[in-house]
Length: 124
Image 1 (tube, rainbow, N blue to C red):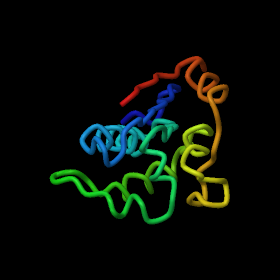
Image 2 (cartoon, rainbow, N blue to C red):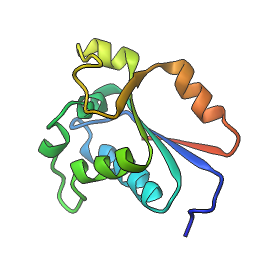
Image 3 (tube, rainbow, N blue to C red):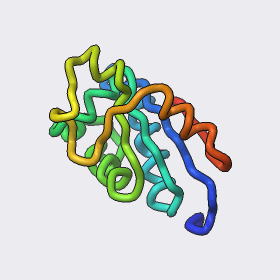
């Protein structure tokens, strides 16, 4: 449906288990776009940074929401997932701790991605 579009979607998730609906919305929109063929970059910031760790997404539950672990898998398979450098550091999360395929990067990379021609950024 959207596979031929030259646009990309950058989604910043700022909430985790502290605001489950907002968190699930970010992951759902990112995974839906990825499944539709849009290049997606999901940024895990604030409390959502915990989902960069193995097993954390599997423990997230929200009624009537797709399992977060499945949504994360779709995004990792087709796009990129990044944990914020400062957010990870505040939680003592290092590069050896995160799920394979998730990178840790900072504001300069986020700005670069959002300023790319054709990029659309959403913050949840």
